[in-house]
Image 1 (cartoon, rainbow, N blue to C red):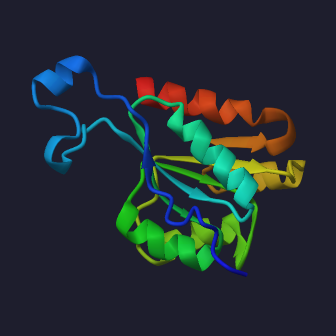
Image 2 (image 1 turned 45 degrees about the vertical axis):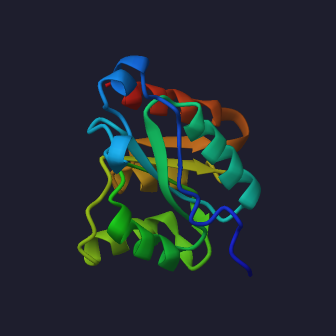
Length: 158
């Protein structure tokens, strides 16, 4: 299966204030604010990936630092991206989100501060397994997708 045109999908939201611009702060010289919310997305559906990227773009001071559609891709990308937030689907090419989370630890890759799962499989079994793996947020793509934006807004404001 070919890679999505969204990979590596590095995007940022415009959050620089006029005061930062006048003072030379913000993105000048490639320097980013320390409180920037960096996000890595692991999703194998191009449509859902695009929707997640659009959601991140609505959040002030946030940036997608990478995207992947498979477990192996995600491991490689996460090694260098070191995001604060990881958004992922349960079912991925090459395994599940649970496999990915275990492999992050096994590979010595720093786990993001916040992990959000969005899935079309919102069973109680997956929900329990997610929380057992330390996942902070578990949302149904069909009925709770908007909650992803709210969590990101809350994290961005913190």
